[in-house]
Image (cartoon, rainbow, N blue to C red; front, top):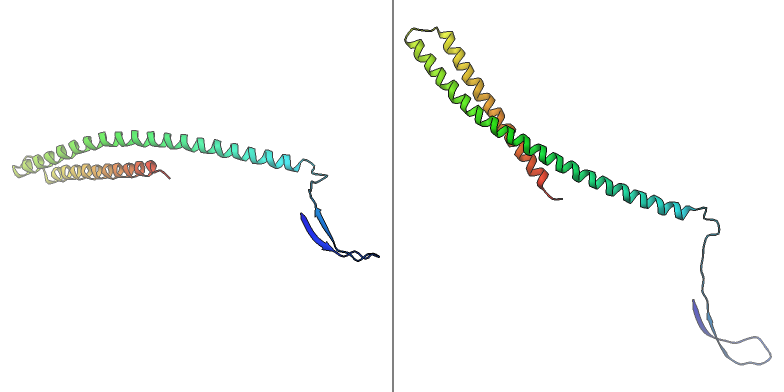
Length: 145
């Protein structure tokens, strides 16, 4: 703090004097009991914990990314097998129907062949959906936040 003023002292002589004052104030707790040190240590420990958690999240993200890529590759291979299976079962269903028309097999055999063709098509559609889900997951994992 600083102060400058004209004062009129109460004395036998009536004169004006200029009085200048400068002051400094400082405060410090006498009994801290280590609170400041413990708060500093706690903040440091918390910062280290956040860094470790960040590093773990990065590792988890990398692991999930690689796992999703592996699953996608596996599903792409499965997708190709399903396409072949659909084509083969469709061809077998056609052959079974031709055999039915010629009187060599019964109608239930034709229905079984059609059911197998339908099941192969449903499995192919499920695999296609799983491929799309894995691609969406990869897109979500690759976004930077």
